[in-house]
Image (cartoon, rainbow over all chains, first blue to last red; front, top):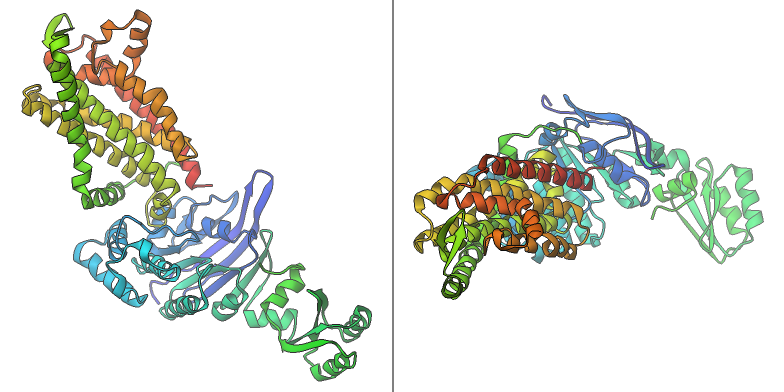
Length: 306
Length: 259
């Protein structure tokens, strides 16, 4: 793609007073790639995104996007960016349609061209039947889709989605994910922040796991799960902890108390042998399931995502 | 604060957004600047003229309604520009997050700030001009004088719009806008020689009132009755206030958007 642009963050740091909120984050986002920043609330995801498009000035480090460098050239860079911020900032003074045509004006898209583009985007996000509605009349999911449509007015080369599905019901989240995948297929680079494990696993090509402003690990969701945990997890309840811990230690498996029970990883080499040994302890509840990113996060940070 | 480029299009585009909101409810928006001066001119002009008769201004006697007209123009400018800058910008900044949304487009802080400021000034200028037209129809101000006064109306609108934006940048709750209204705006609009010549005030109060920016604007708008002797200084005084207010407003609002 001739006009594709990559974004690279170089050693981004951000401190507020004595508190370092982001500490040395570096990564590259290529065209057509979805990179996710996954971490609990307060991990520094939104601050990082702010530095990428220019509303947060890094204490150290910089961002390069195509020919531009931020901070400094944010205004020029944003002409090729689409930004979906976490907070809803649609214009309550305008209809759904005019939210798009009037915002297009800022990109010098005016008149018939603006109306045409607004129509296309409303069709893309399935809001064409609500064109004349007021923003206040839209559901949460519709509002998020409209913010996404607004971010696409300029055919951006890169889109930032900051917690785009927080507060949406499962159907609305599925709708939104479909749009994100369409966008990726069109060659757009996407940076997604989320604290939803399923969203990260489903959408992202590559993940940066964030804890207290630092990247603690990175890789594709499946690689991370395979490398950090393995293929399967046993959820165990109602057994004495010591024999279970000893069993895990002997097998080189990961073991952790969790809720009212325990999580034990089953070794990839011979999961059934370990499974039978756990069964032999006669737990009151036993469940075998594929390992996921939540387990990865738990193992790496000792804490759950939310 | 970083000096960021501002393009004419960017500033215009932000201004245009505010104009679109205004345009959609233009009838409601035109009502206060027309009805307010008519009410004042009727109430004070016709009500007080039999009691007051002529007033002494710059050593000459002028009919009271004529004296009042320039004051009404200045008040129209003050109220509309200040309220747009203070209340509406505060709402756009803190409730509607319009500024934050605009900054996801390829717009700089300077462009969004100037767009908001010029919009507040536009509302002040519309109010001042409409009030002036009412005065022209009532034969209290010449049409040609009004046309020549337009730059003054614009200058006053920019000054009070910037003052409004400064308030929007300083207060944390919308109710707090009332504080500068009661402490500054209302004393200013009553004491600046709008309804009566400042020479009737006690000397100390008169000296304070003479320094108020609205006083300079009113005196300059009364130029058809005679230019105040130090008028170039008054112009500079207004320009100085405007620059200081705008600069302070930008310095206060910038950290609310960029961290």
